Amino acid sequence: MTEQQPPPIPQNNTMQPLLKKEKRWTWVWLMVIAIVLTANSALTLIGGLPTKAASQKWEYAGEFATDSKLATKFTEAGEKHWEIVHCRRARSGNDWGYECIFKRPKQ
Image (cartoon, rainbow, N blue to C red):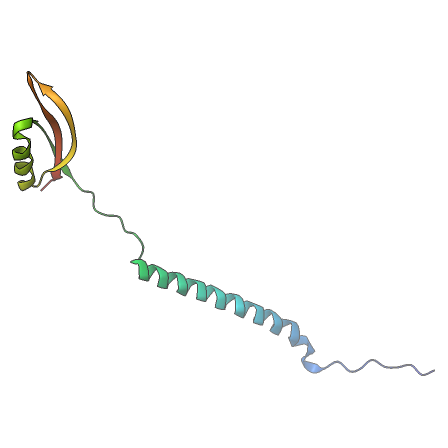
């Protein structure tokens, strides 16, 4: 019996494992880039990342108005840029009316 010899090893066989790893990493980097670009596009579409707004300063005032003068008091307050924060039914002496808290931006 004659002994068979193994086939010769190709010269480029040592590069095959390295090329396979490079191909896998190429796909990973392509996926990372695609995800980042998609997220960036989505954020741009909805207006970007939220930024911290400047702190707003407010001034407050309390006011009591009887039922007969309520509409007049509210109109006057609105003309001066006051906004109603809270109102409740209240009594001052013998008069019934509304006790209100107003606010407006400090200037």
